[in-house]
Image 1 (cartoon, rainbow, N blue to C red):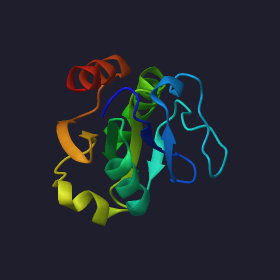
Image 2 (tube, helix red, strand yellow):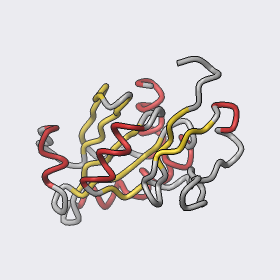
Image 3 (cartoon, helix red, strand yellow):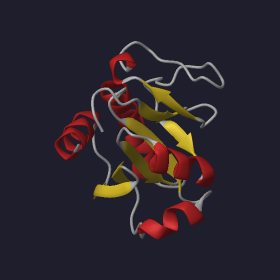
Length: 146
């Protein structure tokens, strides 16, 4: 991919794939389908279908927090994950997948403990880490991987 090639960015609202010029990434691009902002600075809530779209189609790295509502450390890390999303957007998309509500999406990744964060680049897992982390450590870890 060259600097001239448009990036594929999946909308956090309608989950349609958009083509965005790399030069326009910092200028708050909007979805061509639903017309909402492609970057909100907030983690995207995923289900099985949207997980496949964001991980498989996005040209920017996607960090997925695999969590469950009953998990205390997951709930404790949620605000830090949201802060990291603000700091890393628009270069990296942060998303959350509830492993209890969508076990079929999480199963192929062999999640053994939660929270577990996995970085996907080009649809492939490139790194993972388990355990609750503060926002600064999430940002440092993601930046060291991508």
